[in-house]
Amino acid sequence: MQKMQTTIPKLPLLLKPFLLSLFFSVAFLTFLSSQTTRHRKPTHQNQTPFPDLRIRPGYSTYESYIHHQLNKTLNPKLRKIWITRDWDRKVRVFSAFFQSLKDRKLLSNSSKSLCIGARVGQEVRALIRVGVSDSVGLDLVPHAPLVIEGDFHAQPFGNGTFDFEFSNVFDHALYPWKFVGEIERTLRPGGTCVLHVALSKRADKYSANDLYSVGPLVELFKESELVEVRKVDGFGLDTEVVFRKKKD
Image (cartoon, rainbow, N blue to C red):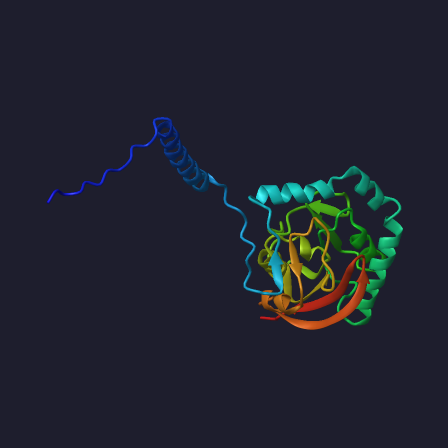
């Protein structure tokens, strides 16, 4: 019996170059993809241990974060507004906040005080107005004589320098744990920290984190105890949180 032979039809001559080109194209794209993945710049990790505190993505380096913050701080139109039409109104509102803290025995005239993220110093002027004369502000851009230059992630002060620290820029902290750690480092035992934060709505485009409850703050202030929480109306911020550093 004669064996049957199976023959594979030959590919058309014109199809061979096409398949060969397709093979090399796929191989090149695979190589290119692997190289892109290997050399991609690391992105900031927007993870925290706290579900109610989220770091906003978008900063590949700390320098890019600082540059973004300076876009607001150095904006000439904003700076003009801060020192002209906004000045009296903000000093008046901050004065009322600080007088309330004095009435509640959380601040006194003898308190050595720091305002963190003070821009052009409305908060500092308000403290001085209500009698807290030993007060200074800290910001990336100085504004003499009320505000000196410094990064709130690494305050330029020694341990236990202040009796009182105030800030309404917690949402601008890229590393909230460093922000709080520096407050606790530079506060004296028994000193008070007051934060104004936004819980009911998201902050502006310059914010680096979003806070959804007071819980993460309580966890971050490891060396302090929560004194009180109350609602305020503070230029888009709705909650005042007060901590007192534990005594040794």
